[in-house]
Amino acid sequence: MNPCLPEPAALSRRGLLKFSLGASAFLATAGLGASLSGCSASQPASGFLALRSADLPFVRAVMPVMLDGAVAADALPAALEGALQSLDRNLAYLSPEMLKLTRQLFDVLAMAVTRGPLTGIWGAWENASGDDIRHFLQRWENSSLSLLRMGHSSLLQLVMMAWYSRAEAWAHCGYPGPPRV
Image 1 (cartoon, rainbow, N blue to C red):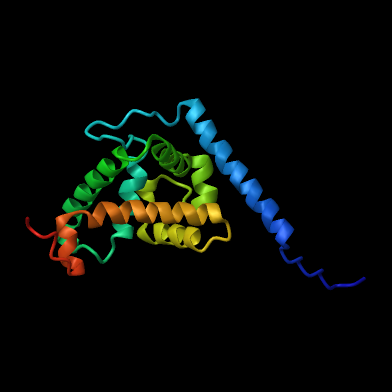
Image 2: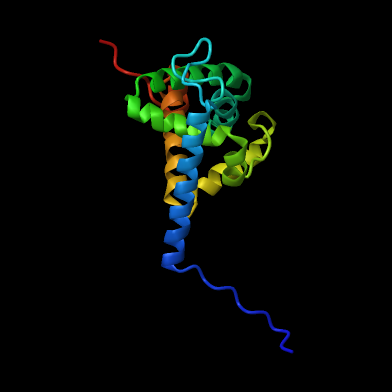
């Protein structure tokens, strides 16, 4: 009897393509399932132009982690609320197709059946720690799946545009603001 275990096979290019195709199909099916089942109401939450009630827990959990170091701790709650309003306004001005894609991303991140496997956050976003969210963001940023890397890039761009469009963010990066006309 040979006690040696076989060496695990390396992931080939074909295997990676199959896995990527399967992951893409899974995400598309989950997003479609959410939109068809009514999980993703298209009506904005009260007081918002584009963000829905289901989007708010995720966005409110991720924004403080993404803006870590850019805002003083005592100013964080007001800054986050302002950035949330900016994000909502930016989403309201997206083309209908881009808004649809962004909502599909938010739907995948809101649904427990897809959130856990894709992010590693198995509970509600409100209960996720900053370290859990950092790990999720790093996981997506460095993923071998281009779909997850694109999701990370989209989230990063949405939050950064929302934050740096605000006057209180300009001082932190040394921008004096637009010239007065």
